[in-house]
Length: 172
Image 1: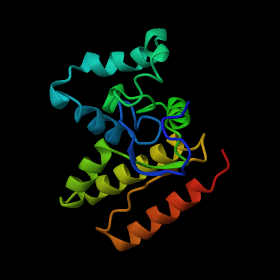
Image 2: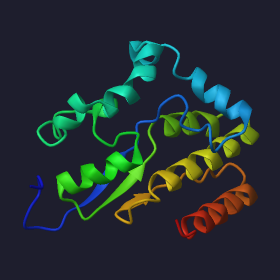
Image 3: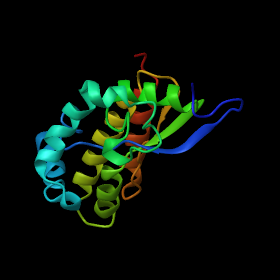
Image 4: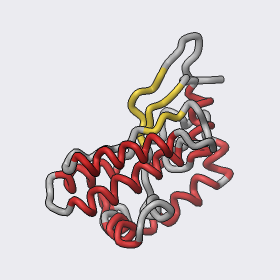
């Protein structure tokens, strides 16, 4: 039974909780390495936490409590926080019509890059982040990816916006 019933709800503030390997399929090596380094000592979480969290989500004990723990689990512990297939189950259990899905960790990084002087890295990270968000949302039409368009270089901004729009329009 869905958590929300008898009304239409569009969730306008959901996030992905990215694991250290989140950008591996979408970014060049320098971005992959830099992103992984951002997790060293993240919020006091040991690297083993990130290594084990995926296995935790795949365990039968975790799955058995998906419905009863839906509103209790937060951040990396939440159903569908980093697995796009699990996110669809979370939407079913929540009962929402759609979700805007924002990146979390990359947004903090992108903001600092946008106020820095390494614009090449900024646009590489934004492009990889956008591809990752779009892919995360690709299996379920209810998931609406939110992309990041830096404004440091207007010509590059136009390119990255066009690229994100083109990527979203691909049939999956």
